[in-house]
Image 1 (cartoon, one colour):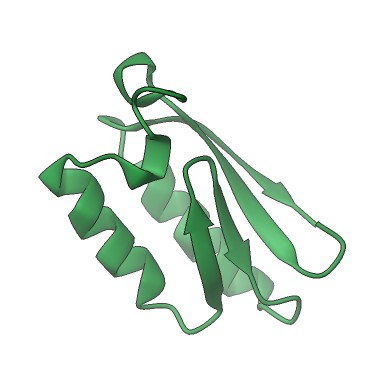
Image 2 (cartoon, rainbow, N blue to C red; image 1 turned 45 degrees about the horizontal axis):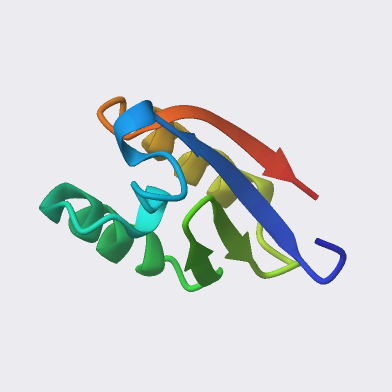
Length: 83
C-alpha cells in the first residue's frame, strides 16, 4: 500500500478467506478483537486479511499490534508488516 502501512494477517483454516471472512468473521472473539484493534487511533480500516494504518504510525505501535495479533492463536496463523 503506497498511501500507508498495513499489517497482513493470515488466518487459520476455519477463519480463512473466503468463507471464514478472516478478521471480519462473525465469531464473538473476532468481534472483540476488532474492537481492540480499532481502539488504536492509527488504524484506518480493517479488511478480512489486512489492517490498514496511517503512514505516520510509529514502529512501536505497529510492533504492539503485531504482538497482540500473534497471541490470537485461535485465529491467526501468521502476521507480516507491509510498508
